[in-house]
Amino acid sequence: MFSKQGQGGGARRRLSSAEASRLQQLLSHKQTFWGLDEMARLLTTEFGISYSLRHLRRLLKAMGMFHYKPQPVDYRRDPEAAKCLQQRLQATFDVLHLQGIAPSKICIGLADETGNYLHCNTARMWSFHKKIARKVNTSKVKINTLGFYALQGHSASFCISSSCQEELLRVLSLIRNLQKDYQAVVLIWDNLPAHHAKAVEKWAYQHQIYLVYNAAYAPDINPIEKIWKQLKKSNEQARVDSQPR
Image: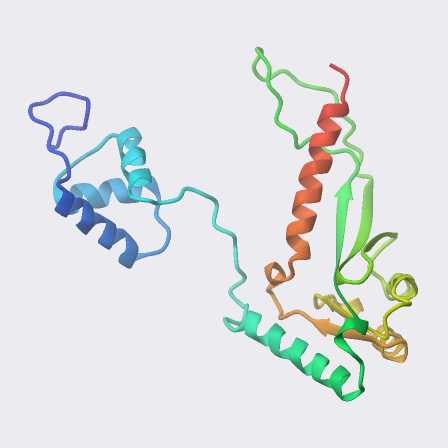
């Protein structure tokens, strides 16, 4: 039976530099993600050493490993999703070039919908008391927003009742009016069914809005997703700061 570091039981053998290199190689090539218990078992099986979990964490950190929640990726996602979006954008700009529209006259923007509950209990609070209930408003009141983040042009956000065809037509009209200085608008968004509605695509085409659809099951490719994340975090912190103390 192997003794754990810091628990006595005779001489405590540590990993040599050669064994540490070997361990790093095993962790790198066997699989991408590891649980702490899995690595502890590997250490015991391969090297006959049993570290405490606390010491093992220090070792892994010193080896340059990261501890985080992996971002989930849908199994249906095309491995070439980013390349697919790039090709669609290139084809769109080729068409605009053939029409004689200069790059400086093209508005380029990212669009996406998001929904926030106005009252939710997501903030972690500090207290000297454990498991004390706090009265909050838990009504399921939700506000929907469509954001347009312009890489070239004018950004804006719009409150929408839902992501239905009528609302999208209304918002597209507002976006186009904001970009009067531009001959064309290239709008990148996801594959929500309403985005593919014939009435939406027809209206966009008639008003020089070129809809570029992101690859399916790859929302992370659209940078506006990260913007929503930061805005939600800022709004939550502002909500907490505004509460009476």
